[in-house]
Each structure stands twice: as C-alpha cells, then as structure tokens.
Image (cartoon, rainbow, N blue to C red; front, side):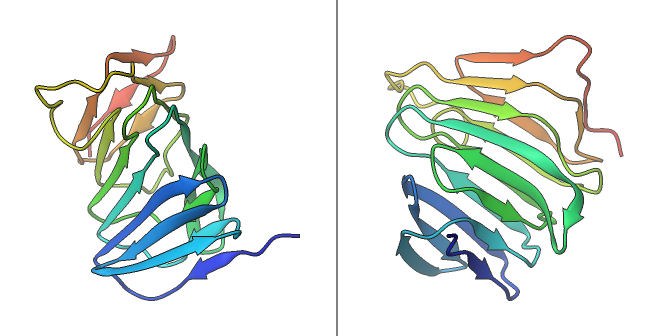
Length: 170
C-alpha cells in the first residue's frame, strides 16, 4: 500500500530533494525532514517558492498539471524519485536536475500558475565554469504560460515539440 506524506501549513519556501526512489529531504523554510519508504509526497498549501532537486545520477523529471486538481494540489513532478504533488507556488517553481545526465520534461503547467519557472539541468542559475560531465536536456512537450512570470532554462539541449508555445504573457 501507499504511505503518503501530506504536508499542510504555510511556508515561504518548500523544497524536495531526491535521495532515493522512495526517500528524500523535505525543506520547509529552514526546517529539514528526512524520510524513507514513503510515497507519494503532497504539499497542500501554496508557498512563495517551490524547489525540486534531483540526484547525483541520471534523472528523468516530469512536470505536469493535475487535471481539475486533486483537492489542494495542482501540479505533479514524477521521475527518478518519489512522486511529488503540490499547490501552485505564488512566486517561483524551480527544478534542478543536479549532477548526472538529467532530462527535465515539461508536459504542462496548471492553467492558474502565475510565477517564474526556472529549469536547470545541473544547479540553479547560469552554468558554472566547470561543467557537469553529464549532458542535460530540457524538453517542452506541451504548451505553457507563466502568466507574467519569467521562464529560465539552462541545459546542454533545450527543445520544444512541434506546435508547442512557450509564453510569459500575463
């Protein structure tokens, strides 16, 4: 069966760092919760910033909307680590693949998402002078709109499927 981690409460910053297939580190502002053997993870309250960090290995990270929402959660990240469901962040959503050959696939955003979307094959921000030895990719397989938020993506390969629109228009 499933042993779901459900986190409720108001926080400025929420994060999830993958440490294994069913384990990770959850950040709530400056608090850290380490867990193992739990799935899935749900953050039911919107935070200003939500950050997802992959492992040191080759990760596949998929971001998509949960159609019609599942109660208080609107989006989901799945892949190498445990599935993470969360409410739309009000400021920014950041996904960092970490070291290794990582693939981030953006399938969709919740239609109500209005914030910055930051996608990094390695670590946050512009790539460092010393490159990650892995080849990272960001792929947009569906159209998205950040509704006035910035869109930032750093990876060795960045692609959008045919007929996909990337918009930051309010």
